[in-house]
Length: 100
Image (cartoon, rainbow, N blue to C red; front, top):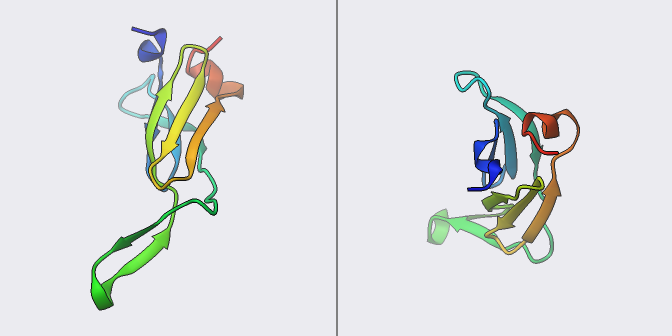
């Protein structure tokens, strides 16, 4: 397995809250060390709940997948058609995640 899976940094896709990077060196006290929330675009689909008169719709990011390679690049995909974003952790957060 890639060394990324043994990192003290954890990356989670959090739907309309984008992607979150967490420091889990103390698993009983995780700390957020970074985040990215993509902007909506003209291609972002609206999401609706309810039907008929109770239907409510909103255009929002839906970051659904995250993957990290051993170079520290973070790949996130949006299920509301906004696209793929390629990110790079920087600063002190990069050191926590143990990327070179």
